[in-house]
Picture (cartoon, one colour):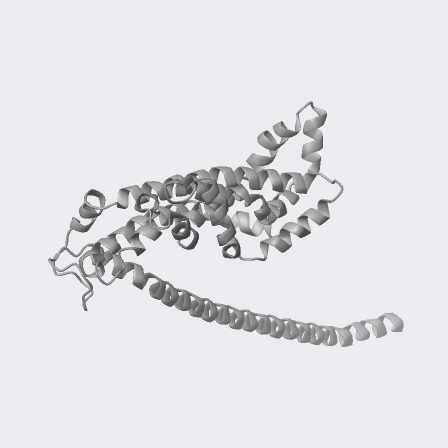
Length: 324
């Protein structure tokens, strides 16, 4: 005889099975709809990202073209080997060649100007990098009385443009014989003398290096200079290269103070002052193509140097901006 309770339980199970299957179907349908919505949203986001990236790349390409047009025009004019050396109304030369470069390095004072510029930029890059890194390391690692006041004073002084002191600097350099024929060492001295005040980015980068490394090395018997030279500098390679690049490029294109200190002494000109002296009404008609060749010779080395070290330059800027 069948127990009525068991029969009732079986009936309840049979009634609950369709209900459970219906609930599962509803859950599966909701999950499917959720996945479809997420997939649609992901596709929309991906499409929007592609559109945004395309717009950015197009904009950057247009900006690059606009930026490169003047340089391309200068290159074309430097390769123009026609009888008329002045400005013309067309872009592509009718006669191509390197005569302007040959003339530039054989019949003008450009090699002397180029040498002056390289000497100034090289010595400034070396000494300014040393002073900046020493100052940044001292302010980053040491705590002494007047530290905050010193940093604030240098910050305030750095807000004033350098050309405000041109007159007094000129007379100081003149008293020491560092103008006109002595303009090259004078320009080096002026650029290096106040370089320690440009410590901000380097100090910010050194602040990101843990001080525990210094302490561990000093416990092992290292001196402060050994810590700086053997531990900090290898880890601070990006900021070192950034400092070298900025220190080298500043005097490379300097015109205002360089023309003020040289003051008509042709042998002490740098390339910026020397090439600008050709842009007079009397000389532009005969040396315009040579002027363009000189501009190319000035731009190409710095451009190649910057492109080769761009990775470290960006790392130095971004790393130094973390702390101040």
